[in-house]
Length: 129
Image (cartoon, rainbow, N blue to C red; front, side):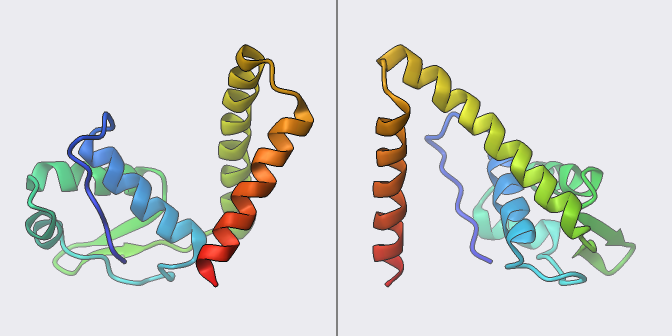
């Protein structure tokens, strides 16, 4: 797992960490019961405050994505596949609502939006090849 903090982003650092780890867990990049870096080690690696790292881990634990074992560290919690999928679908719907709002402002048709999406997917596939 490689985390990146963008100090120029308008998003708080703890949210950046939270989002990246959450995505790694939900995508399966991090497996159930896999240990995460300690709060102190991650803070040191990212050159950020321990408090910031702890806040991100606390959010992940509150969401049920992590569990903590005293003296051992934080680990990836077992994921309910259906629940994880439902959460991702809800997130996609939120993004789609925003896309619909922006498209209406720009007077984009559904066909134009779909073409933009096709181009983006094709570009992503080419980058992976």
